[in-house]
Amino acid sequence: MEDRVVLESNYTHFVQQAVSWHKQNQQSLMTWCDPNSPSPCQVGAVQDNSVQWQPVLQQQPADYRNVEQALELTLHQDIKRFYQLYYGAGLSALHQRGKLMLLMVWNEDDVKRLQENIIGHVIMKRRLKQRETVFFATTEDDDILLSVLNSTGEVYLEHVGQEVTEKLSDNLTDFIASLKPCSYDGL
Image (cartoon, rainbow, N blue to C red; front, side, top):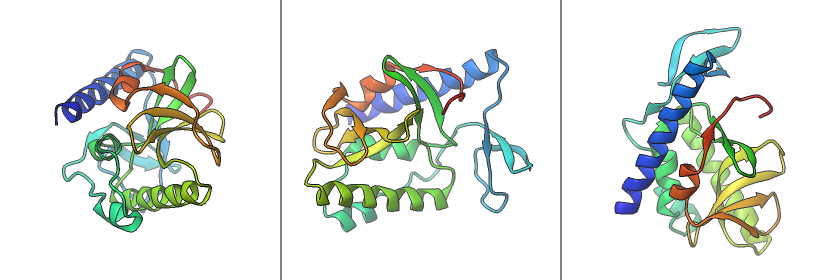
């Protein structure tokens, strides 16, 4: 339980830093948006399929029991909590290894898409006889993700379709604490 609170605190701190960084650098958090798929995090009206947004706490945290039942496994608590905290379009960050985009869910429909993608990802890992991971960030290279090793909670750089070998952090809490906000450029 204490680990969960620390993860929430570190993630919330990073989200606040990212929002402040964008304000200080006079940059808006903007994203492409389907006008037929609104989000609680939208700020203002959709114009030319783009909208300004701000991270918003999920009032009813997403439930991942369906994913766990479908895969017959328990998802690591860190990855569930990460995806249960905020609605948003993703926050770019700088890690010592380079830029990344922390994934977020846009709305309840996006939660369903994420859950389907997690199921597909874990099934792929099983077919390849690799350890099960769950992604939480993308990088500038489309073939490289950042993932949590489900069995331990460790954070790895993951080359799509390959076994994880490069550990970046013992846990998601420490990994998020190591991040610095940056621009969306290049992601």
